[in-house]
Length: 127
Image (cartoon, rainbow, N blue to C red):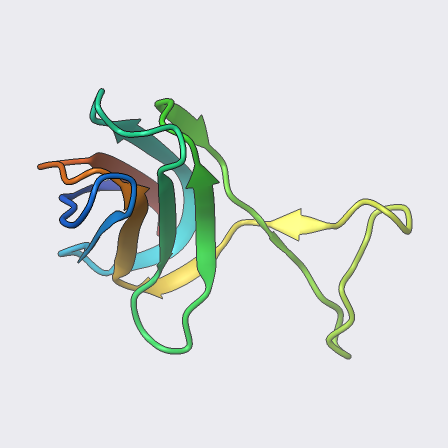
């Protein structure tokens, strides 16, 4: 098992508080997503939204965060049985597992100010 990482920086354009931008990773992430680190320009407003998703259709959102505080995230998705029913651990808590990817990743920033490198996202995955 080998640990990989890919960094993606997003610049935004538009009006203050509503500027947007998106960038896709250069590498194809093939494996299981372990962690995502987000870091923001110090001028990002508190309502900035960062969304990390598979770049191709059909897409699945891996992480969506609103705020402007740097941080580590460990995104997981709910698992399903053979009939497509969402599984739970005790009837209330979702049973989750790592995201499986074989795609580039798109990182989108919204509700921001116009900034060069408004947000940076580093994705860690294993094959």
